[in-house]
Image (cartoon, rainbow, N blue to C red; front, side):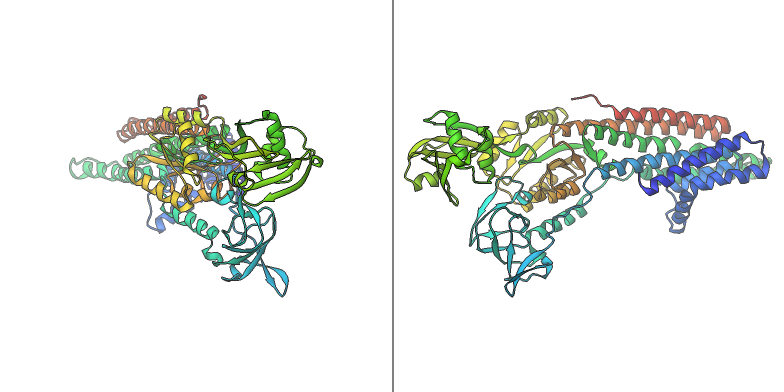
Length: 622
C-alpha cells in the first residue's frame, strides 16, 4: 500500500471512529452539526475540492459533484450520520480500486530498460565509454563478450555468436564474422568485435522499436470508467430534477391552484430526492467487482494492469500469438535420432563430447540429451569451423558433428532429414553415423490452450513469427492455429495486426500474446496485449496490459472467463442498483418514501451489490 492509500485508509478509520463516538454522545443542535462536520471534512475534503474544481472548470456534472451535493443535502436535512457515512463508503470503494490497480502494477516490472548504457569507442589506442547518442556514423566501436551491441553497424574485425533473442524472439544464436551487419540490442556471446557504425543511435534498431511502442500506444483506445459515463447523464438529471421538485410544485400550487406554496415541504422532498439519488451501491460495488476480478485473475497467475482491460478482454474474439517463448518453450532439445549406424546412446555420446568445448545452445542440448558427466580429457584436436560445425577426436576416433556443409567439406555422403528443426549430422572415423534432430518444443498446454480459446468463443487464432515458413507451418498445424505468418520483422507484425484490426467488427477485440522486445510494438497496438511474465522481456511486460506470470498460454482462456464473469456481475449490479434507485426516487418525489426508508433501501442495495461483486473472485477451473 502506497503513501496515498495509507493516508486514505487512516482518514476512513478516523472518520468511522468519530461517527461511532458522536452517535453515543448526548449532543444536538449546532454543537452536533459542528462536531459532525469534523469527520465529514476529514473523509470528504478531497471530493469537495474536486467537485469545486469541476465547477470552476465548467465540468460540473461528475461523480464528485454528485457525492458532494448528496452528502451536503443529507447534512442540511439534519441526517449527519448519513451524510458522513455515504462519503465514507465512497472513499472505501475508491481505495479498493486504487489498491487493486496498484497491487497489479507492483507485481510487474517497473522499468523498460532496453537502451544500451554505453558504447566503447577507440580513442588514442584506448577504449573510452561514451553515451551511445555521442557516437557518430562511421566511428569504430568495440563490443566485449557479454555486452550489448549499442548501435547498428558492420563488423570489421572478429567472429562471434550473437544472441538475438531479445530482438527477434528466436532463441537460436546467430554466427557473425567480419563483413556481417549487426543490429543494436543483440548480445555478443563470445569474441571481441570491432564494429563500424552505419547509423546514429536515434536511428538504430532499439530506438525504432521504442518509437513503435510509443506511436502504437497513442492509437490504442481505452474504455472509460462506467461511473463517470453514467454520472455524465445521471448527475445532471437528478440535480435538475431536485431543483424542479423544489420549485415547480410550489409555484403551480400558488399561481394556478391558489393554494399555499408550502416551500419547506417541497424543499424537504427535493433534498430527500438528492439523498436517495446518492449512487452508493454503484460507486462501491462496481470498483469492488473489478477489484474482485483483478484479484481472481491474480490468484490464477494472471496480472491485470487495470479494470478497463478486463472490459476489453471480455470482448476478445481474435487472439494472435508470437511463437518462440509463447507457444514453444524457447529452449532446444533433442527430438530424435535418425539413420544411425551406431546405437542411439553412442551417437549422442560422440556428439556431446565433440561439442563439449562449445557454449552454443545446440551443444548444451546435446550434452543434456547425453545425460552423463562430460570427460573432456577424452576429447582432443578440436576444430570449430564457423558456419559448419566441429571436428574433434573422441577416444582417438575422429568425429565430425555439424550441418550438411560440414559433411560436404569432409567428403562424407549424408542422409537428408525431413523433420523440422536443427539437424546435426555425424561422421565417425570418416563414415556417416546418422543425424540428430534438435528442435524447440511446444509448451505443455499450448495445444490445450488453443482448444480452450475456441471453446470460450474466440473466432480466430493467428500466429506471427520471425522463424522459417517450414517451422511455423508445422507448429501451427500441431496446435490447430487457423492462420500463420512467418519470417517477420517487428514492423511486419504491427502491419499484420493492423490489417486484422481493420477486418474485424467494431465491438470485437483483438488480443496479442508475446514475450520478446520485438513484440512490444504489436502488444501496444493490439486492443489488448498479453505478455509472458516469467521469461518475457521487460519491454514486452511493460507494453502489455495483462501478464501471465507462469508463461502458461492456457491461462489466457481462464482470464477471458474471469473477465466475462466480472463484466456480467458489473451489469447485474448496474441494472439492480439503478432499478431500485429509480423506484425510490419516484416514491421520494411523491412523498411516500421518507428519509429513513430511503436510507434503508440505499444501504440494502449496497450490501446486496457488494456481496454479488465478491462472486467475481471465484471462477471454476477449466
